Amino acid sequence: MPHGRVARCLIYAGVASALLFASSSAQAGDPAAAREQVKLGYQLAQDGKCEEAIPHFVESLRLDAKAITLINLASCEEKTAKLADALGHWVEARARAQAEGNAAIEGEAEKKAKALEPRLPKLTVALAGASQATDPEVVRDGVVLGAASMGVALPVNPGAHTLVVRAKDREETSQTVTIAEGESKLVQLKLGAPKKASVASGPVAAPATEGGGTSPLVYIGFGTAIAGVAVGAITGVLAFGKASTAKDGCPNVDDCSPAGMDAVNSGRTLGTISTIGFVVGGVGAAVGVYGLVWGKPSSSSSTSVAVSVGPMGGGLRGSF
Image 1 (cartoon, rainbow, N blue to C red):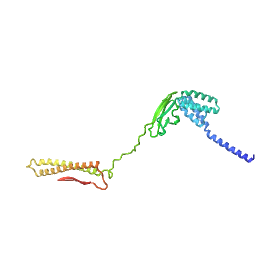
Image 2: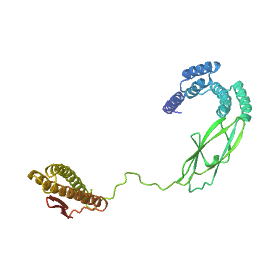
Image 3: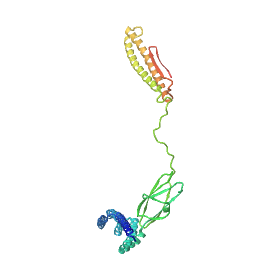
Image 4: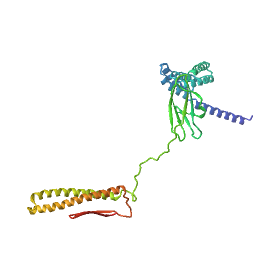
């Protein structure tokens, strides 16, 4: 083989080796940090604090997965009633120990897995009344169970489990199921009730009048009513005052002083005005009520009301 080809082959081999080394180094993680996490977790486990030890074992596996870490994690999970998790890690430890050539750990993991299997609860979930059209989804403890998992006894941890059923155009339903160690349980789930047609939410607008806003008759009518009642009340009080003066100035019909006669005439006039004021007030109130109930302002027409009160009478006139 020519020297040039040999040199090129050596260069290619060197590059390939460098790439492989770089790849393996990138996947190696941090073995030193992983060992430290295992030591921390192991010490906590020895002190009976498995709940606190588990996060350290999980972190160690992330940094550098080893069979020794897996069996420590599985042991703590078994002690904290996470039996399904423990079984999975015992099985994984057995496979990794075999790959590492560690027969002692492989044998221990296999023995622990076989002993744990009978203790594992099995939960079977079935969904009644589902069809492809409803596109149902069953969620157990936040994990979606596919169609292949329906009707299958699946291992779970002992304790409470939340089951949620979601489907198109159906109300979401949920229920909690409690299962004991070694127990097998079947749960029949159902679709939720059909969803009610959604109603657009928001403030309900009052019926608008033809010209928009409140009819002018409301303001004119109730304004007139207030003015009429005020005039009637004031003149009524004055009339009572004149009546008192007339009584003193006219003890009888034949004996009446000029001041008494003047009080009599003024009292009669004020009484008439008072009566008219109250009448006008009543008419104004009626106009206001009419405007509230039936009034429809029009942009093409104007509304005006005038009140007249005088010594000989009063009136309410206007155009609508």
